[in-house]
Image 1 (spheres, one colour):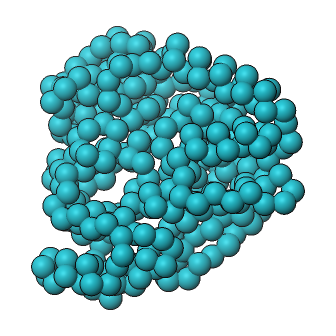
Image 2 (cartoon, rainbow, N blue to C red):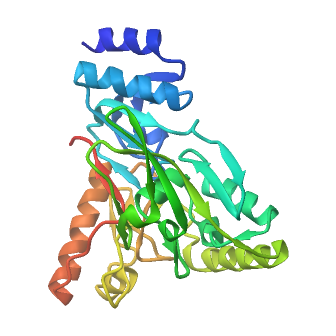
Length: 300
């Protein structure tokens, strides 16, 4: 079946197709077993063709962004991993609006908005990854959240492109609810007119704050746990005495207790064991169950 699928992927698609591709090459934690196939569609039409082929053959798939909020288990991923990196178009629209594809990096979007004097998404400057990934988890910082600025979300489901206005979105702290199989293709954002120099000053301030508080110096996935209501995950972890705790090559960062880092040679199993240790310690001390912000996928 894999040989037949490989042949059809090459025959019917225009994008890049990699076989038995280690996910450690595509995640910021630098761990993860191989995906059967790693496919980067050339554009929206190519993505539609790929999804049709996968539906026809009953092949499971997983969509990834920049891999910055992802932990892939050591057994890898069966089926097809879909990267939306080439859906990277950005279009300025009338009325302080911009359309950005899912593959646009947060940095690219912020730079465009700064140059054009459009404010409201500056907080994305310090969040690595892509617009699609930021939307999928409703990324935020400094009191802002990305879905708050969405005027219209563009997705694909069952082969059909869908446009959903802001009032039709179901979202909240670190989540955007989508239908099963629904994939984010892009979004139109509504911004505020602002002086580019003032936007630049805010960006500089955000980056300075990030460098001071989150410069951990090793591969990581950003904040690993969501903040429970009324408190901060890093503080709960710190109070258990687990700052600097290590399992194999995985460690609780000494610079920021909500960052788990790869000190070198870590496996996904190391990270999962460390996550279990943290959860048990925080639960025992406070009664609070931490919820991962990082998505954990793949097989043992």
